[in-house]
Length: 319
Image (cartoon, rainbow, N blue to C red; front, side):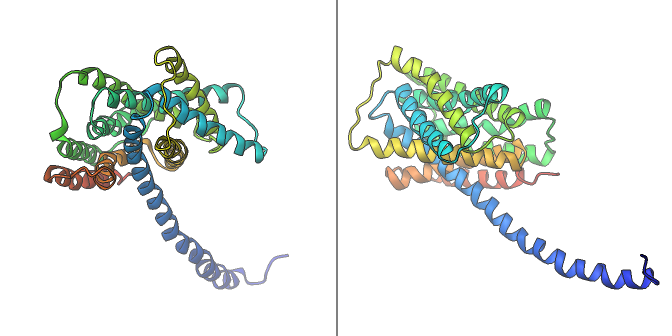
């Protein structure tokens, strides 16, 4: 059963094949995995930035909570139909409750508050700035609640990113009229995404991307449906110009955007993923210039450089 000379056979047959055939595929897969991860990060920034533009356009045709309810309901029902066609098991019991809570926070509280803030006159750039504070708030929550470690270099990167965002939209900050109330709603939206993503990471880390997201979106739709009916009286004008905006916000912002966020949260720490949101105001500014003719001044460009540097630094996570 044993070989006569194991010391001679083993060194020649074991290490060489393992190094030649085992390391090659792994090494070849690493660049592909890095590229896929980079693509997911880039897509998250662009898609999330587009949400402020679609929100601003959508508010021309619908009141904030009504717009949010339609967005969540369309996306949730579509995903529920896909889950049914795939015969996926729908969440039950405690899993269902955790998904509903996370969906209410990340989707309903965040986006309806953003819509309310912008409807009260807060510019999309300033709205993006306030939600751009999410990396700091989420990271601070993740340290005691999730036990994540944030290095001094990461804190420096987060601070640089915040400075870049503030610099980029400094010209748009002013307080008058409904701005204070609008800023209050945006602060509520910031609280929603910060607490919601930490809750998601803690209790919904293994969420199915289709059935889980469907539950979260339908829970969010139920939450905002109440003020949409009782406060706004279901105020919407279903014009031809509104449908593309509504479908973009439902399919791209709600399904693709949140799906990318949860995908990255499953692979990386909350601090690392949340730092990407420092680039969202820059993405919003770029899309605004491209689609709405808004001009980017020197402060915006300088802030873009600073926020990019901060994001790259904050993403150097020690494992």
